[in-house]
Length: 53
Ligand SMILES: [Zn+2]
Ligand SMILES: [Zn+2]
Image (cartoon, rainbow, N blue to C red):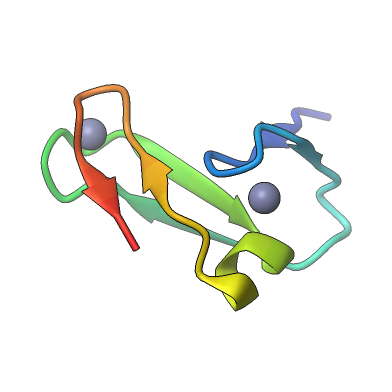
């Protein structure tokens, strides 16, 4: 099974854990964020340079 990496903490997110997945509003790249980073509002940066809260 494919695993996803959290864009904020770079940790692998087990697919059994809760996490959010969305597309970068700029380049459409799929961004995944673990529940922890989402809860704490850690910043993230897409490879296109887009930064979000
Ligand atoms: Zn994370
Ligand atoms: Zn992007």
